[in-house]
Image (cartoon, rainbow, N blue to C red; front, top):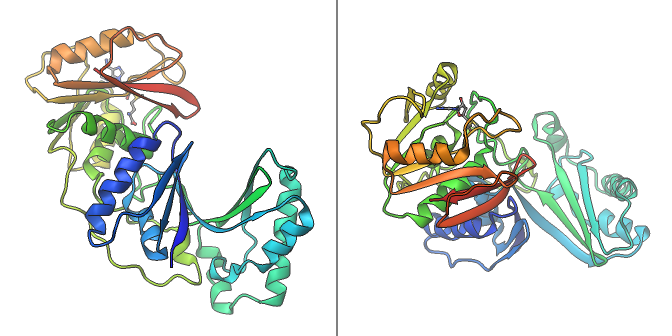
Length: 359
Ligand SMILES: C[S@@+](CC[C@H](N)C(=O)[O-])C[C@H]1O[C@@H](n2cnc3c(N)ncnc32)[C@H](O)[C@@H]1O
């Protein structure tokens, strides 16, 4: 039986996220046909089996969350919403708790989020009265991640979905030390994958303003599975163990090097990853004896870190210093960037609209 999954993707990264999905599907499920998938703004719909869909939480690095759609129906009033939700088989997905309700509404009669939340809570409580959750399930509530139900109203069609991820997927599991203005891991993953897609023969990657190393670590880990954290679906009472999936041997790049002028942040980066070489060095001092074929960086820019040097000068300096075949630089859209790009990728970084330029 097939289920409908919805992958929440950082807006702007839908196409690159679909490429990741297709490539990793073939790596991890080579004997299963690629499922039907559709892109929409901020998401990808995938129709597949429950097992494969849930496994996507372990293998994809760009999505922020993965939802499992439970129902879809026309709904223009609260009694109908209540009746539908009280019949949803919640004991398959919830442990007996009242979940967090997240709602959104567009061109629909139902739009009051507080009323939607109350109706959903009442319906789930009524459902539990008729079908009390098992004691075994209830005992797990305190150790389970937050369970969230998404109710989306679009043109009077209500879509009910349960979050299968729990904590957002950019939380990879390993405890990492962060510097100032770190990139979210899933955005960094999208950037490095976009970089590689546009320069498939580049094998070496340097980040000359690496901060705590997020971008390089994401590049190093791209084909590894996410372990060391819990996912909401692992607490679904209906959950049966999934087929074991393993890290792929594939790599995005072979050699990695990180530099930063801040000695403390370099110490943090070294603690975050033993697989990458990190060096304390100012981009503007010294000559490089390392010629790396790819340079990627997220320089400080105004809002969170004061901008003392023009971004164009930073990019040109990195080009002189490392003579890369390609350079990727993340620039806020609010700053005019005069260098001509071969390709760009626009997305939002912590509320700031940014553009990733490939030069
Ligand atoms: C926005 S942060 C990078 C964050 C990083 N991508 C992460 O996710 O952790 C910019 C970094 O550039 C470093 N930096 C600023 N000017 C530099 C320079 N001239 N040479 C090397 N590093 C510099 C800062 O110390 C800071 O760690």
